Length: 277
Image (cartoon, rainbow, N blue to C red; front, side, top):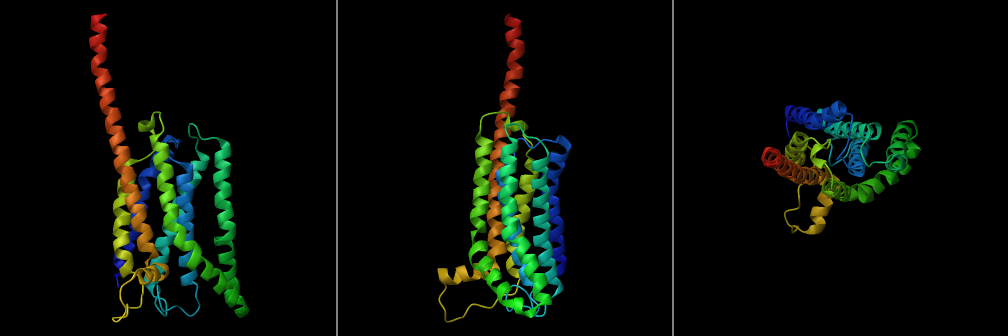
């Protein structure tokens, strides 16, 4: 198992990777270049991960996988990791709703906030209520189990598709014509998130409790999918997000380099044109 000190370092690095983008948005008071629907999809993905983590740590008697039985300090640090990512994405989403962006109408902001509100109403809100009822009324255990099973088996496996959708939304926004090189996207933030979440993806398998694979059972896609469902989802989701942010980093950096070269060329030719006149 991963020592707790590395989990704490992971928490700090996660916060650090979000700071460049949050600070840039706050200083510019402008979210131009950021795709609102990319941010809301990432926020939904982080909310679902937070909910699944909450389901695990709220189990009164622990579990045989993902968390220790009884729960350890490392389990709570893992939950703090999921909660931190969720809070940071909610903060970024709130800033996108608050600050203006050229070409982003109020109607689209209403659509995005409504989409997230609907997801909260069917996920985190009832989940938190059922957890409270579970400790007060043992008969609520069946309802809690059905709700948890639906999210673990059906909703949470769809999270990678949300990350892919968020990546595509951001790419479409970046490729639109216009002064995107002056956008409110932090290149340093993209690079930091790519590196940090890649590290998190590599450490997640060592942060959770999992049963060993049967030696006489051949490695197959059903077995890998079962591992993803019960313990591997944080690693897979973090890896997909890291790859997406890395590709966005390359795209934004290349676009700004090209635009910068064109601007430099234009500045050099202006004196020549003026002298000919």
